[in-house]
Image 1 (cartoon, helix red, strand yellow):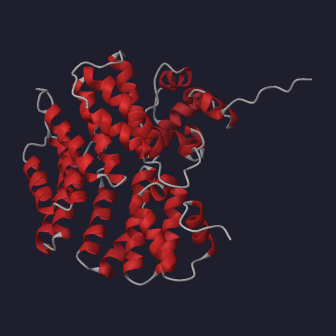
Image 2 (tube, helix red, strand yellow):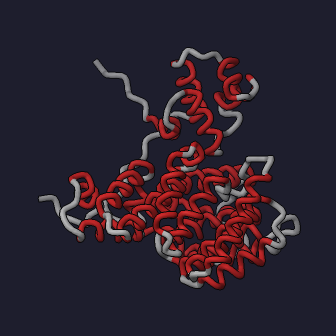
Image 3 (cartoon, helix red, strand yellow):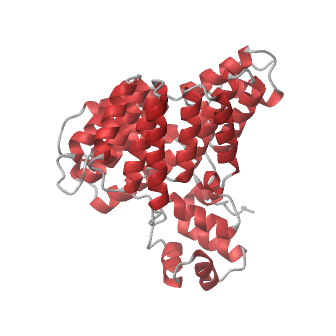
Length: 384
């Protein structure tokens, strides 16, 4: 007798998974809608796939109502590679080297918009190998819609900074600004965030500071303006400019206080927790260890930290691991990396900075068994 074929979790549309999980919780569509603060019609459209779930914040709200982890909705992560899969970098480099104006693949603007939204979500979940596979095609298909091409260049720059290719990241960020400048209804300020990040990754901190500060003068969105102040503040901290650092981060904090709309259409991640995490990193750069540790602990205890996308949380934990190691505490550094790995594995296993940090922890002496196991998984040590 043939056994029924078991459905692949990832083959089930996201809306249908929501419907199944809601039903399993014994909730009607109306009760579910009430808890979300949405209409029953909204829930029905989501579950039928008429309306797309392409924002992590909304998925997080649904997961909270259903009392489960967002990854259960999104599907299981693919097993991370044992070494960084950087073969996709060559394809991204080749895509950036193409200068044709017309896309080689024909898709509708709506299809391209959904693909860009999915790419943002993939980035926010630190699924970098999958994102590298997607970006070359996305850079091509979004050429027909310049606002989407700007967003794609931003995503490309972000992941290239993560994977330690700052020169390519700078190229993508510069393309974002150049493309944005050709769109009358779009300012270049959002794209300048990627420019500042790439310049910081290149070690050009003063240039990053100047670029970010210049853009704040024309930014008409508080999340964008606040993020630019954060980038400027971190650049100032790296140069040891204590006074400027605190002034710039204070400006960012003021913008979080006056925000009335908490949406994030530009995918900046800006908010009170982002400011707190920037203050932590700035304190670390300035050598204020006690303050940095205090701000790190405060951030971990906040509700805002748990609401951040996995990429953002794991990146902060890696920064915290570096702080612990720099202050002579490899054990705490190892635990921070393990925490980051549980949140977003590719943030630890694919990023060169995290792998280098893990190697340093192992070199300091006998490591905890789970830290040594992680080092083996990523190929830094051999299984005995």
